[in-house]
Length: 249
Length: 358
Image (cartoon, rainbow over all chains, first blue to last red; front, side, top):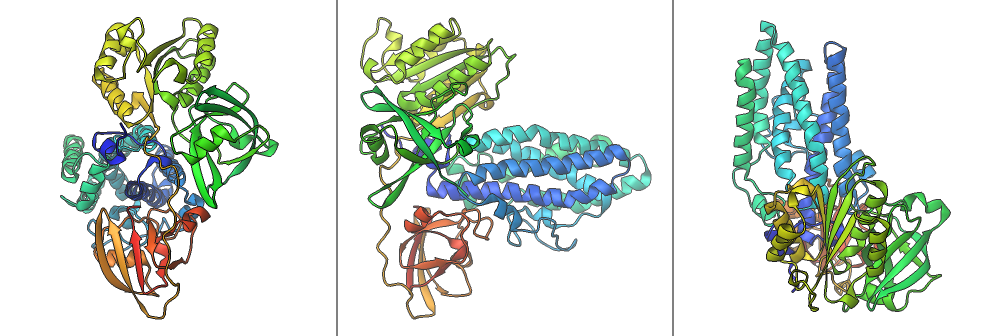
């Protein structure tokens, strides 16, 4: 009658508390959560400057809202992580989330430094236009990733991602509003095109390598379902669908 | 960090032959910490022969019951559940962490919803908490419970469910499925499988009317019911899970016997197991932690914070000794069992055997 947890997961089963996750699953799950948390914290820390850079009160409110909600999302997932016993206040204090590397650094998809942020969040933003472009491109990547993560086999995390997903989607809409305003001028359009050229390959790299042993492990545990290449393709399609009508693709 | 607080047992009542309902009272200053949400669980700890054991049990009380109550069913060979069923008595104290778990949905006094609960055996415990709270706080909502048991005698909270049906006339319906006792209707005999779920959808429950379903029980039930609900048109956001894993070990395993600590050499032979594969490499005893050494040896071991706070890189030392520089994530009992945070781990012995699989 008893079913092994591994078999249960292979059949699409959900785990529901730290008490019923096997050790290897635990490691991969925590790693996956840390990657999301660190990216949100680093992303918010980088985006915070945009609040002052944005033209007009409405745009500053939009930037403040995005910054605030990304911190909130990090906090929610950190809450799920904390149920595994770690000291989450110490976790937050253990890294400099605002730290950035050189604009020209060649980081590809690998992790750098001591936190698990996606490599794209190691690059510094250069002003408002740059921030809006990254917010749109990376926001769309986050939307695609969250669609995948909503299916994660750890139910408390899947529920949390379901709460977060609509708000992250809203961040993209706010970014698109900003983008439309900027490209009204020729100068603005040129800056946006430069920024797109700079950020596209860096956001592309966040989807990781085509095939990886980690993906196989995560898929076996029901922590992943769609390949990196498929997600990358979905993202590229969405970017194209949105930027083409604006003459930016 | 997890923190345990004392709870006083104010009442213990036998519910079935092998299940008890325990009423617990926090100290006045801890009342806030134990203000639970329906469907949550408490994690208890207790020493058995010098070894700490932790077990989680779901709260069966509703939020408006004015009491904290858990149901504990005895599991064959289960040290904690057997002790709770045979020796726990009113007046005793139990250490518990604040309630945890997300097996619930937001309630809204104005909502008019149809909830379905599917529970097997002691899986009723959190579902009962949800039923009570929901019916009390959403006066226009209704609840259908499908409840599987071996026989009438093993049904937990049988009387309480009957009372609730009378209290909330027309808003709670309970369908008992009994494995070993024939009932007048064949549908209600046997076990919950895909066929039975389909028959229930055809005759008793219109799946299109379901807003949210709560499933609680062992692995097989979770898979079968979730699959049936999805096929009937529910999406993942409408299905809430609480797994009562069948394979919880009765006792924590003993710590591996360690060899002599702190040996003289500068280098250590490290044997690391990950995903069933074992690799051996050498590393210096100082200047490099075990995680970095394993990464340098091209092992794809899990880690996140590298600061000793998140516990992603936890592994178990099976042979040899090591020390940790910083530990903000593992508790004493885990350390006693041989667990280490590999990002903070420096070997002391000339050979150390570590597993990420245990």
